[in-house]
Image (tube, rainbow, N blue to C red; front, top):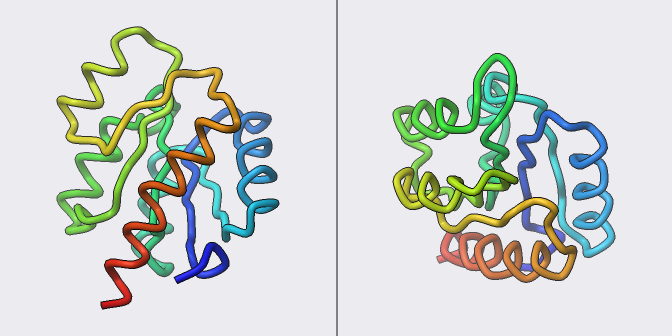
Length: 130
């Protein structure tokens, strides 16, 4: 699998942050979808092809990241790696509690984001190829 065959779902309510991440990842050759909250992200999971990685903000309106992650797993999408993005000091502990792949603290450095996406998304897309 290549980056072009790798889909990233960004679940982020801050439109500026979501757009910056989308542009960065698309420049690297990834296919990117964006959802502004957990409800929209769940709808995408139910109606579109599964992404290879989810970048998930915890603090969002309507359905926050924690609620989304629990619903996502209840819907049997528990093999998709999830990277939590947060500016809160408690996020690392919350990520461990929720069994997320990892947690990146906001503001996220572009190199850290790209390295993390490469590590988890490409590994997941290779798993699907077998």
